[in-house]
Length: 211
Image (tube, rainbow, N blue to C red; front, side, top):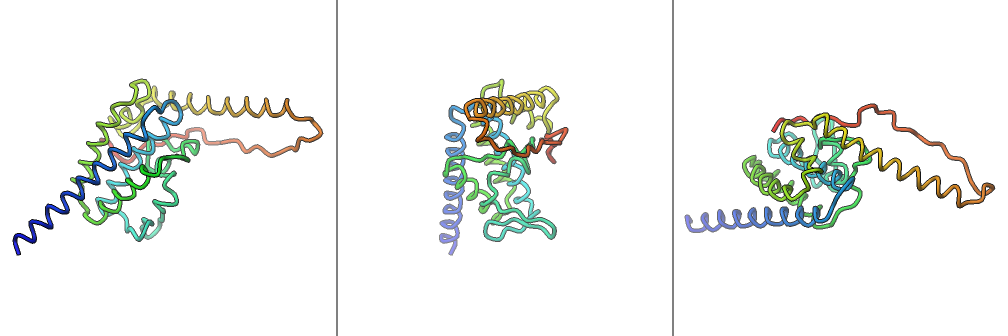
C-alpha cells in the first residue's frame, strides 16, 4: 500500500514538473523576437495570468469547465483568454487585448489554471511564477514593463508614460492608414462613418497585488 502511495506521489510530481516545463517553454517561445506594442500586450497578459493563477490557488473562484465564477461574476478562461491581461494585468486598455498568440501558449496556461484549481496549492503557483519570471528576464530592459509592475504592484509614472506613448503611436499608425486609404479612393465611393473616441482619461489601473 505504501509503495502504491509513493508511486502516486511521484506520478503527480512528474506531471507537475512536466506542466511547469510546458508553460515555461510556451512563454519562452511566445516571447521570442517580440518588441513594441505586442511585447507590452504579452507582458500584460502574463502578469494577468499570474494574478488569476494566485486567485484560483486561493480558492476565490469556482471553476466549472472553462468558466470561473463567484456569486456575481463569470469569466470564460478559454473563450475570453485574450482578455486576461486587460482584466487582471497592470494595464487595462482594450488595445492590449492579446488578439493573437501561439496555441501552445494558451493550452499551457489553461492546463496550469486547471491543475492549480484542483490542487489549491499556492506554493505550486509560486514555483511556476518563479520559473516564468526567469524566462521574462530575457526582455529588453527598455521594454521591461512586467518587472516595473512586479516591484510595487503597479506601473510607475515613467512606465505609464511609456505605455501611453506606445498606445499613441498605434493610434498615429491607424490615422496614417486611414488618410492613405482616403486619398487612394474616389470621393464619390466614400461612405461616412461614426468614430467613437476613447473617453477614458486613464486607461491604466493598479493591480490588486504588491509583490
